[in-house]
Length: 296
Length: 221
Image 1: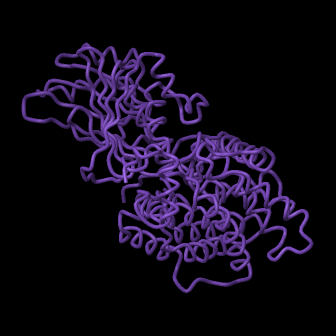
Image 2: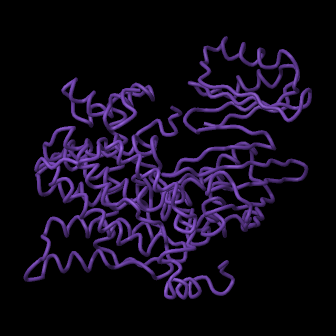
Image 3: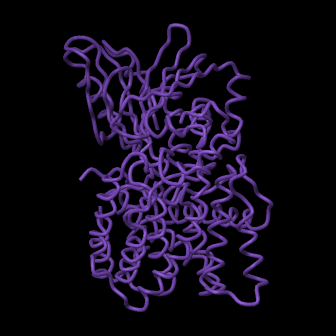
């Protein structure tokens, strides 16, 4: 194993003068005993699945079975193209719309890539595809970005957790946002250490986020959290590229996320017992969707 | 440190039908592992759900996914959404039981597969991002990470059984990565779970089956 923590990952990459994506591919090849070309091809296929999901979500008229989600990606895209003034900007809004698109495809039981989970599957595709257009990136840069995200997710998953049931939304959308921020930094030509800073900056802004899905469905508020995760990832990447550094080291932020998750009550960890799920409207939607047989 | 996630494709992946990797993809993989161990489609399955699984299984499609797995569907199989109908058409009866019992992991399912006298009881946990672990098999505690192919051997608990299996594997140049032997009580039945670097093929499984004291041999890959 070449690295187990983000600090080890950065140290190895910088001492060997490699990119994070190189280190991840090398480790994968060593540990799984597979040639790098084969690993690369599999990742490229995952990228293709992500792009198809963006395409579907921004062009088709999607609605989930429950009716709680669908159609917002197209709304945002339309606004982005036609509004006289955009308050944030065209790049951020494209990332947001693309993340929303993938998340809506997921809610409609379409095909996605879990990154690191299905609940958070919009953020990485949304940011990478948007950044690639802005930066004129090659196909290889995009595939490499997925390896960067994978390396960060690998550290988070093994040192903390990536499921809402174990650590709340901060473990899912929070992890995905951190992974995406690091990936975009490498795409933009940033250093491994800047990628690590982007992880810390992004994840710090997700700490404490609870998992409280209305009716237990991965829709409300999940789709909008994917949207905002993409926005935070893009801004965190810019901050890191500007040279902004986190006061708390990245691995300690990850550890804090883990401990906060452990301290979270069960009602806020994907049980639909608390938070937005337990609001009057959340409960009434639950009854409408599942009828009175519903458990709570 | 025990690395739960070994490959980058546990993080960027799996490719799957939505909406939840723990509640859909992980659940489908638990169902499919149970099906593989059972060896065929069961006629009847009782599924007991705990924790977050019990509270949200309908919303997340955990029921659909577990049944899809029991039908041998992969996580990205587009037939997944219709798995409940397909199961009833193919004659697999399924019942869901929600349990309030506290478990170590919030996403836990116990599957009891039956076909006449043939019965298998499996406990699986879905640990996030579509990854799962089998933690119990017919009352034996075990820890299968799903990171490597696993050879499961039921045998009479007596001397020489472990050595016999290990010798066969060695002769065929199959390397053991991790091995665990568990038993309920001394001298009764025992279960060897062996993670191997190479897959143990059907021929080799047959050779192990013929050894003295072996009860059943299965491979999960």
